[in-house]
Image (cartoon, rainbow, N blue to C red; front, side, top):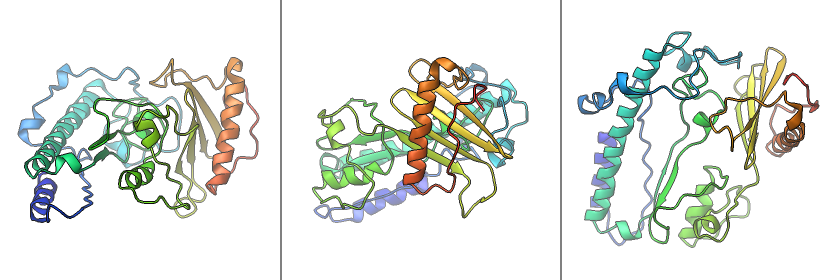
Length: 300
């Protein structure tokens, strides 16, 4: 990360200050192996780190990816001390990354570029790190699919937070709008400016995510699919010919610990999201197209 930041600052200093620029920096931290420098490796004591509220020694069922590489970075079942060490290393890597981003922002200030430069901070995925008995990203729980998106720059309100549903690729249309460039009609990206400017509170009615079972990757393998709206979230698993669902109330259960898929009191929510998932699958040409959307009382 230091090398990336040094190179970015060097480029900023050599670039004509009156010319527009677009810079993309793909930091590798906090990806494993998590080896922060000594200063950051000792910043968080393993013994003082609390376990996540949704920590489990093992995932409650086979999701088809329990032994992928990421999940073998710690023994099964998960031990509290192992998870605390993983979290301590993760936090150390994040703090190192924060310091490098700080250097980059300071460089923008020093070069008088901060007032007319939009900075976007995002990540491609999160990590479980002991939550739900998992370690990696190969799942569709919030800790893995809900990622940070922070914007800073001219015209962007300071210190505001919005909960509107969006995709990372909505950044494309958003930046075009800020740059006053016409947004192509063919793009699926939708500008976030109405939400950012306080003109709207909603952006998308639902969000769809897919993991595994791609025609180019594993045409006969397991898969996971997810759809959510403002409150509820449905995950579908297919492992060795068996289908299983989870339904979560994200308002009352944001850490996704209480599966409501088998609760008949939520059958309307289940069926509504199941239809929504099928619509997304058809719209995105998903190779997985479920035929039976009936509600099985056992959550299967």
